[in-house]
Length: 418
Image 1 (spheres, rainbow, N blue to C red):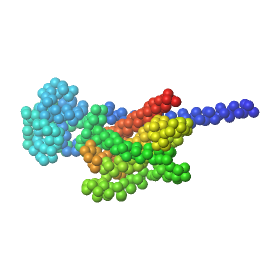
Image 2 (cartoon, helix red, strand yellow):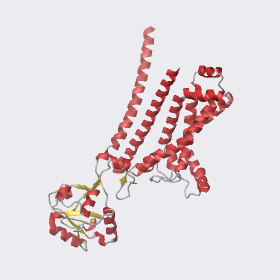
Image 3 (cartoon, rainbow, N blue to C red):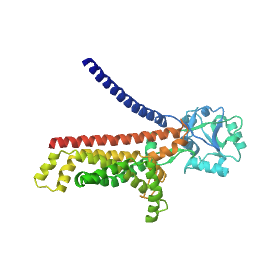
Image 4 (cartoon, one colour):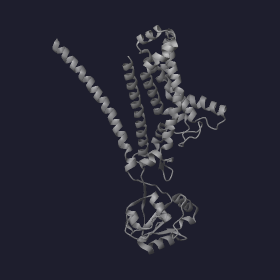
């Protein structure tokens, strides 16, 4: 009988051990996959698609077997790079040849390439693609030009334009232009700031409402009122986010347009308000549990010293429960930052740094959800979206660490006071 009982207990322990290992391994596998797909964003060189004008050299110039990024190509055509060895080729003066600016499309391409700079002062200007081909062939390995891909003749070679996303540019650049924009740009500062700003303004609304509701349910409301109120609040936590998004589109957006005379009601304010009401049930429910967990002896001692109900709540119960309330707030805001459907539907979808509460924005979750279906697997856009996911993962992880730190700090303070 004793052996059977020990065997049963050991089996139960092993089952729970397997379950915990499975859960941890699954989460670790998801995190590993996320980071694995994001790393190529910063380590891999991606070809830049050019549909009309392409850089060409003579086939004897072995530079065409290499690759060049857009910044270096700009330096070549503006005259800042003048020797092939600066591009990894054989030493020799670079002769820039141009005819593309004689056509509207070519002129636009040159302007976009140079971005405010001027063409190299000693650039040779020709009138046609045929003349350009002849000029490059005469100069052999020393000349570079721009011409339409369909006009590349024998003896000439197009060489590949590539780009790589740097960590600094990715985090602090302001231009998020995924394909089909040419050239694409993956700089996430507007997207990251949108998530942070929307979460901040949702916190301004959600924290007073959530904590105030918790204090009312725990310390003020009649027990029978609380029996109805708390389940209703927790029911709102189960409301599908797509329903809240529809409410924002159909009710909140037109209201904001009418009330403030703005052209578009899908904006930062709309998203902040709806995310706040999504966070309120979490903050209220967890905070109420924390307030009820305060030992009754603390309240009784306060009343015995002549304190009123409000003085006891504010000066005794609230500080004692601050550890749990802080955790509730952080968890509620972490949910706001990680919410996808609501911000996808009501934030406006513009990848820009907002200058007003009524500007449209594009938080990280909305960018991932909206663009992942259009990003070819293995491409720069695909990996950049995973890099956004890593950024969101790190921010949410920091929220959880902050919650744990605050919880331990106030718990230790409470233990010392007791």
